[in-house]
Amino acid sequence: MRIWHQSYTDLNRLPGYAAMLARHARAVCGPQTEVELHGLRPGTYPDGVPPVAIAGYPYARRLADLQVVENVMTAERLGYDAVAISCFLDPGLEEARSLVDIPVLSSCETALLIASTVARSFGLLTLDAAMAAHLRHLIARYGFAGRVAVVAPLDPPLDEFELDQAFAGSAAFVDRFSAQAGNLIAAGADIIIPAEGVLNVALVRNRVTTIAGAPVLDSYGALLTLAEAMVRLRRTSGLTVSRVGEFARPPADIVNGLRGIVADIMSANEGPTPR
Image 1 (cartoon, rainbow, N blue to C red):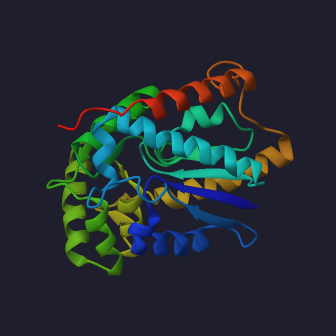
Image 2: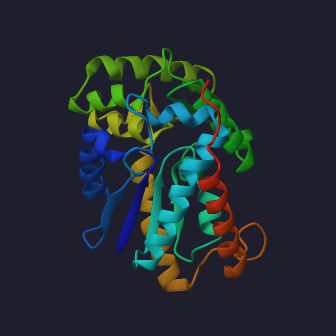
Image 3: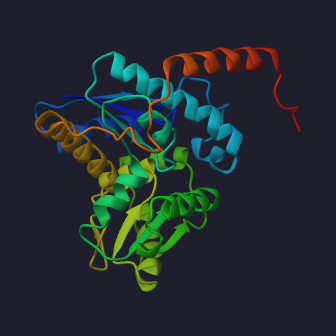
């Protein structure tokens, strides 16, 4: 089984994160599963700009999402069995599902689904306020608003570059996360979801599995495990994405025509005026 891991980061800029992803994938997946790491193109983010910074900018997110969707189509053409999008923004998830037949999973939706099997009320702790706002939108869209006690950003916020340093082991990071997770538990959460891939992997590296009796979901482990399960279900029962409703596959001539028009428009347009 081959799973295409799709990050929303340029993995070349986060070597500690990339190494931990590869190590954790080997630990959670079956021996016959191969997980290949892919990120966004180098140069997607200007120097010094962390990926989380685009969470608050809808157009910037949309442009980055297009890379994810294109990569999902590439994964299917190359014979991968599933795509696991390791980002809690769930970038391009619905668009990708409408275009390919292989299973496409993403972090936020998967975490909510898995958490619902072991807990009644969830607490999501993420990197910053813009990310938290987007998560609330996704939670409502997926129908989980009644199951989420609180969504909160770390305070003060962290970015992926700072978290990359925690992969060497950081007691200060664990103490900080545990203290703020305790606030979510006090607000009614009975499971903690570290709501971003870099945050989750830093906790795995520091062996944080429970806080004050509440489980801490390994969201990346859950993502890969569910991807494996969906591949098996497709093989054994023929389960595929529904083409009735929101995931209807668009005709190829419509998609190709629009792609050509958009490419022409973007090549002719200088983009927004710098401010």
